[in-house]
Length: 251
Image: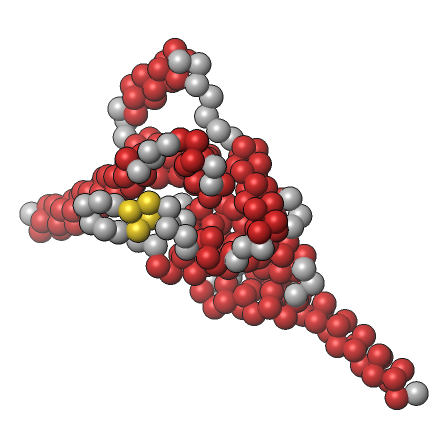
């Protein structure tokens, strides 16, 4: 009988954990849907709304990234998801709707890049710009860590490493402030890409510092361990070049 009690205790603890997790996931989806609905309520004129590239990239980022990870992937763990998926796909086919892709997100990010360069706009100001206000709570809606990350990643693909680094830095800052409703990009992933971007800019010292931050959190992180050796070699070469230049000047 003692073994039955132990087994049932295991059942209780595990199902309690499962139900708590399910409740957290449901609350996360509700918060996400509420934020999207609030943004729609604030769209008075679509022309004006989409005239701001920030709004465009936020919407495309939601379709290309957030809806999948924050809603569909969560619901997919439920066995009844197939029914919802079939209904959704049929409705999309009926209205001939195609979801935005990562390519669309890259084009939208390019528009933001042009806007920054033409008007000399500060990345921090754009990343923290108020896009809408919740009339009930008075809370401001700005870009999330996920949005900033997707912009930074897109600019990295466009090989504009300077602005990519700035946007990834903003993603890093926002990740510390965003609530649990935006878990699609974690801090380590942001730091990984920040190391790549800094490396491309030849900012080896800063890249090494960020890489150490990754290893501090995850000492066995495979990519960071490889980067550690690579960056140390590059920093050593830099020091040798500087020493040689000093010698030449002395001569």
